Image 1 (cartoon, rainbow, N blue to C red):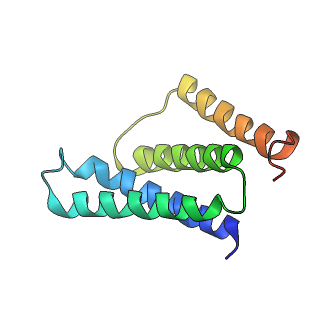
Image 2 (tube, rainbow, N blue to C red):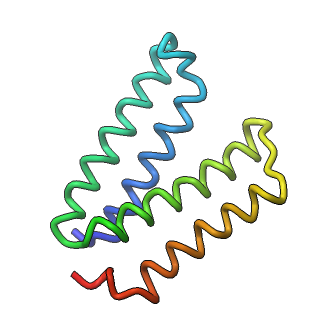
Length: 110
């Protein structure tokens, strides 16, 4: 399967797991805890499949960065969290770093 499709699925799985973490209440709520565990297990399994085809540095950086952005958006839209200008700049720097790693740097050549 296309490693970029797997990467997208790994990111979505991680975001689902991390979002469920907000509701797991220290692992005392069973349904969110189950979703959390399933999301993380799925995400790492998919990452293991991707690493047969792509190098770990850019893959992990992309996975982390996109998940951070999505979790920030979810937190802002649905969980009453706020992002201040410094946080927005930090997110922009993360995105810029992943761009440099994947597009400008030749580290992504496998």
